[in-house]
Image 1 (cartoon, rainbow, N blue to C red):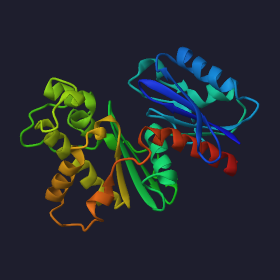
Image 2: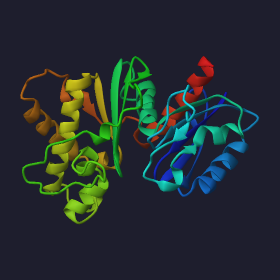
Image 3: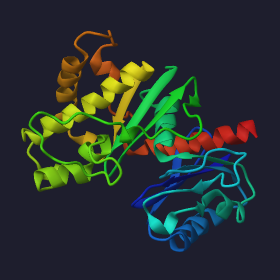
Image 4: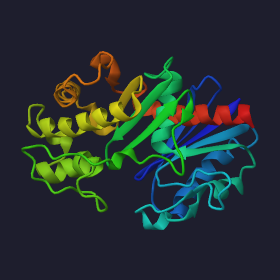
Length: 290
């Protein structure tokens, strides 16, 4: 069996081919420019496998329409990326490939990858955040995405300012939400340089950890998951997790007894492959359930 994966991010699309055991056999990436340019590259990539391709799993930047009975199901909707607003993503692919397609957010796909084959394997409730250019969150309960009228936008939860942080926030909608205070561009504006250029003992990491600890605190009190997985480029900074644990304990004040923090708030086992593995798993499962 051959399955396709599309991890559609705000800066690049990662397309891959894999098998039923979720082994990635080929992977390419394309810059996210306009739908006409980027989707042509995506379609051309999968055309090579058209005769054997069983299904495609898609994890896209959003917001997206996830409701199958909606006239705009499969669309990217009110994204700040103007060229992609109200773009019929699934419909465009369906014109070329008449096969099952799974459609969800990019962070949901990463969450699913970790649930199937990573840190979340064997657990019933898993929450995944990606902390990078933006902040997004996805949650799974017994293998089903937590969603209602739409998918969650956990990256825009409101957070309290760190006592030493006078930064006004970088989110154009909410200013001091989690994304506005903790995403890469917020860190860069606050510190005057990119996160990867900061020393491990720079005080800006204490501020960053405080916001991510609030994220974990809010998630714990709302969902009580088995695992909170923090992924994305910023979480590659090894000094962050211990600082998050300390700030989390200070915020929680013993109110809820969680699992051991080193096993509860973790980074992705699959690393940068979480989204691709998740999309392949969704493609495989969409074929099973179709």
